Image (cartoon, rainbow, N blue to C red; front, side, top):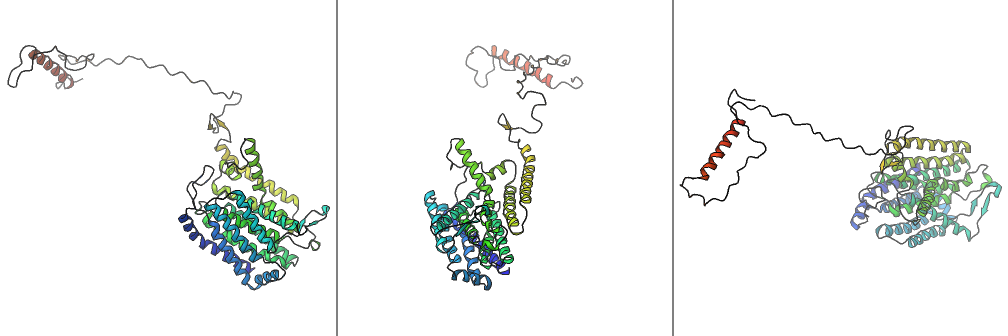
Length: 473
């Protein structure tokens, strides 16, 4: 147990310390794509966090190979023809290189798929394969794969897992947290089998899952909202590859020595983990094709977008996804290892659905409950009363203009002449007159009369504005 903890701590520390260096490197080479309309973040954020995760993976695996107990189990596994550690390092390097090129330059989907198939083929070449497929007892219990089907189905399972994890990577910390929880469930399952049934070969899976847990935990502090760096396809495909390898290496068990059904857990855990992503994928394809769009056209209709739209915060949406993953993954483990009845698991699922809906209802009401009126959200209390038609009322007629007469002017003091209000105080026009007198000359005729009239007007205005003491208004 202490060796597993040490492996996880080494992987977590290496990943955590490498992330700042990788972030600086990503910024320098320009691996910071512009924010797209469907993105939930608002500022350009560097990618390539998967490079640090690969460094943590290699460090953890190398330490595991040197430990007395875990190293001995890995050596025994290598002596029987399997070299999981070396295979993970090489396959992880190939998938990391593929993701790095895609995050930096962009890559055609077929070329990226070829890189995924190549990495899965490396794992198969180093002994990671499905010898049989667990089936229900009514169908024979097991379906043994021949030498042709085994590598093909193994590669297919690995590629599906890689893309499923990549599909989940939509919110800060979501993919790392979900894969970390899945790795914890797989580790719990493998340790339980090793303890309860004496199957020591399963310890290789426990060692790899311990390292994977450490990688995810070391990356989360940098990736949780608000994220300082994204893992990108580099990291999402890497942890998907490692998770797939643990699901496959835990499968080859002798089912005749086990009375319960833990043998089928490797098939149930991936399905349980991927229920939400796969359901979201199916809904996205149906939604886009029904709208006449390509199934691969990006949009904002994914599950994590819906959680945000009903009012959940970024962190709350991620925590809800964590809870669902924990419920499904550990629920399957509890059923297989501890014999928990299936009905209890289904009740727990229904309870979780009810809690999720109850959490979302108040926020949906505050956001309008998904209903819109005239292009705006309808707040509670704005709708029509019971029994009334939900039609907008006609616009009210504008109020009549107030035409009340103005109050009468106050009386003028005795002896004061009121200034006429109809005519503004201005200089009256006069007919053209001869040239103005030169300086020193006195005005004569019309000029003298005009000056007299202006003097009278000015005197009247000054008396009106500045009355004599005792005669104010």
